[in-house]
Length: 389
Ligand SMILES: Cc1ncc(COP(=O)(O)O)c(C=O)c1O
Image 1 (cartoon, rainbow, N blue to C red):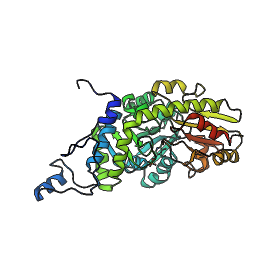
Image 2: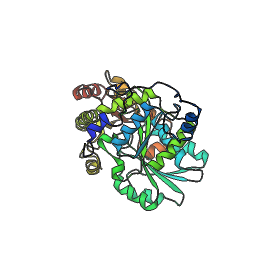
Image 3: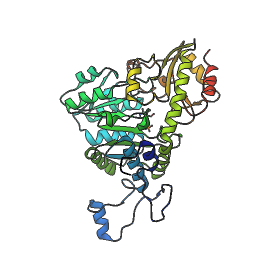
Image 4: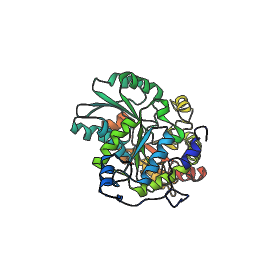
């Protein structure tokens, strides 16, 4: 092709490498190591003098296909796959930061991310300052001389707060600090942070990239130099993805865009219906005109995503009643599945963070998060209605 292929084409074709058998669908290579012609080749492969597969902790053809496809979709020079989303984040930090460095992070991020920054990295001399997700000036004023990285999630989990990536990328560039974006909620089908000026994109591939709740996986996308550092960490420390998981996710990405579009359309319809319900106190969804950053969402994302959070009137009792009255929705903390899931963030995904951090992130007891799947929106809404009384 004379021009670069479109997203839809890349999602099903990018990164594929056929074996000598010329299989049509991407092959799954289940092997922990690779055989060399002779001792000299083994040495050359280990030293990197000769390209080729060595050992499954850091090289596998199926994993390579996944990495190349995701890099193509994110518009990245390179991608490194990891065992989970959390190990993607950990690998990035371990590869690029050292003791004495500092992170500025949005306070509206996934609970385990908050914990990683505040309780684990702090033990290794990496300090984090948390700032209000939506306030660009607060990131700027938190930057210190030793700041190496700004971390955001947009839209955030679970309140769907947005960060203006273009504006924050300018702040990061001026301070010579990397901007890292967790693109889990949107995926490259709806938002491409690197094109907006971010330096690194992190994925929990467990979510929409797989799309059917089958396996765990993660990935880091960015320039060759940074990904080279992440690769060195992965090769040595080993938070590697299983080739089976990489294969599942690789095939999942082929339907990513149509799933994201369909699930986003249902999420918008659900959010509109919930907003009109007298017993629903508040709905958080970037596609609603009432969302404080609706204009930014329209600019930054091609649609508003499939996560709808809402507060019921009352507290934990009323919120749990909605969950316990569901007959169809899956009561599970995962998201990004074709099956709609419902969770109570305060007691699950964000249950291990401090009361202060929860309050700062706006997560209260009456909040519920629905990750809209591919069922009919009428059925999803009807199921929720049982408990919203
Ligand atoms: C926004 C976000 N980032 C990262 C993660 C972590 O991903 P994983 O569970 O694959 O480690 C999650 C998991 O729920 C998430 O929601």
